[in-house]
Image: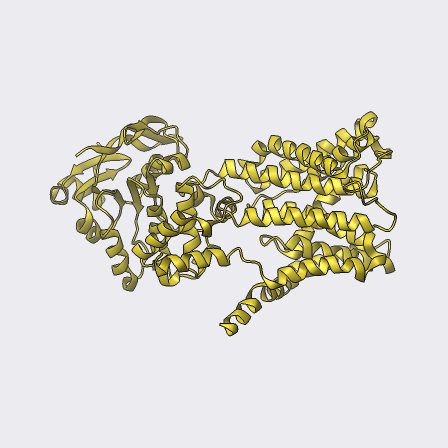
Length: 333
Length: 250
């Protein structure tokens, strides 16, 4: 191999190499299980929200598809897993897989409406699809329980060994494991030729097509995958709370996940996770001293954050994750 | 010589405006063919019809003997037609290396491989390195494309088109807007493109045209005004009149 080929290979490898900060992040995510044993229910919610935000990151951060109705797939996954368990198949992993398939299929069916449009039509179509599903779930009470919610969900122990408990021990470890595995898959995909082609479409769809990338096909594929990820997050909600309400399809879910991703920063896979931690922490802290008005403070924070703080926080995160490790490596060599 | 690219009675209308008026055009194998014409002559519309950005109102486009009129943009690239744009169309968040690797991996049909690693693929590495060397981009291959000077971005644009290994390369004003200092390197690159690639050069700059072109087609008001050898075209009174804005519409 020539020297230039070696350099090309090294650069391609560097783009997907694990950084120390990433490993630290996941070790910390595991360590909080022992560090904060009283907050496991909240941590479980964070892990689920992080997975939901990761799903949005795949379409928004990597492929440039905006969505105001991503809760459609979250809710569909939650109902799919919930209904399966209610009707006798209580194994959580089977339920998870089923929810991913159902939501993925819904994503595939919806994708023709998404891939051709511009940002405005995408916002409206995604919003419309979520509203339709919400109304179907509301009206089809015999199946979904309607406004009373889906009750009578019984979930078996994970792998036949770990029962779900009241403190959220199993729930957190289960959700974190699912998040981690799906993150690994997403990380691998985004660093593959497929992931590169998505970034090309996001950056410049005209040039992407002129480079041989079929934009519609690739966008349909990532939309389907992202929908199944959202379905997995929905399944985790249903399984760890053993209850599904109409809330999973509510507009605020779609809006929250967008905020979460914007707080954490789209397009580098960790944005959804960091955003979920900040968002849930803010929600928890603010609602503790002002339960009725926490939305006011969240709103104010977001306005200030988007106007000023975003570059500051994202700059800090990128410094820790990418520049410092590079400097340390530079000093070593 | 044989034709690699042909259009037959190609027409494109926008409302009542005839932007492309029954153009019969032939690009010979290995040609250095310039497409010229005053502003608004329909040059870019014609290129957009060739590449599938626009669909013609009527007529056909034939590439290497195959009717590609109904094919998508990306299918035409896969069949050997690549282009650059008049205004740079690049992946601003990528590096030149990533952009060339992307085009190469798409050409090899790897685009749907969601789990393979680019740095493990020998062909992607070899071809990417070869293109980077050929277009003198080795020193800046890891820089962000957005941070590059305009002339270098132009080079990346041409390199990315060439990485698709086209049989027909459409260069839309490759030197437009490039500062004088970077122009020479760019023109050398255009001049050293392999002779088996047929090049259609859309250009305003007469120096560049007469330096490269072995054949010239003149478009005026969406129609072919003249077509032939550069020395004959240069002397053609109708062409001179068109460039001076005195063309008769009669």
